[in-house]
Image (cartoon, rainbow, N blue to C red; front, side):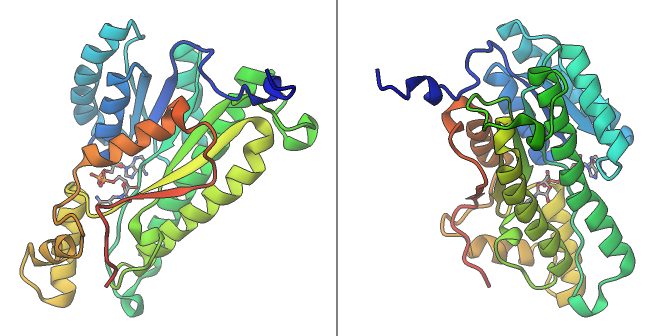
Length: 294
Ligand code: NAD
């Protein structure tokens, strides 16, 4: 073996079953990610706003079938408001104490807001900042703290760690968007919030690497979830196109000429959560069927 061989053992595979928390998982992309990870043998906890509990219960039933196959502990729902720091820290605490482990944080929850730059309101700015940017920031902070508590017994500042940790202690995966790579008209504030997600992911990847934590983002395209129904109808109000036309136009600008399914996104996220991506950090990976920007 090469003399540096001990330094190359970087993966999390030594632990048998990995535990993951997915935020915004009562519906849409988050729900599909949770389900995909359960089918791959992860112990999955889902988080969403308290009023989403009945939808979350449906998701739990689906996950429980998978977790039984792998002998995983039953999935749990943790109510959270990702725009509130303490709420996110509490959610992560609950997951870690329920499973006695915590390995992957998926900061998926997010909202959109549709308006032209000149008519964007303070309220829209507040909402997008708190949920899309705050949610990712607090998710990174809470996960990093927990990964280190579990793996290093409370020693969690880079300054006190000294040498770079060669063994991974956890993974953080953030939801960006194609709108975080290039801004879309009438989605200016939303685009700005997703540019921020990309920035936070890059900075966190660099800051948390010494703690053995990787941070990446996924950038979906035009995904057929309730979010796009909302975007389509709001865009209609602003640009006067008939309902459904903005969605059709967006799909027409996609090389693969179909709307994206949540399943398409879940495949990438499962890769980022797996040991196959252990040497990837600081990336924002597009999964968009080849979007042409307009
Ligand atoms: P969705 O609206 O179907 O689901 C979002 C979920 O997040 C909901 O269950 C909602 O209750 C939850 N949520 C909202 N605010 C929350 C808060 N403060 N705390 C906790 N949970 C909260 O949307 P989706 O399409 O599944 O979107 C998921 C992510 O994907 C978002 O970050 C979104 O920006 C991103 N995204 C979506 C698309 C798309 O085309 N649908 C494209 C690119 C990126």
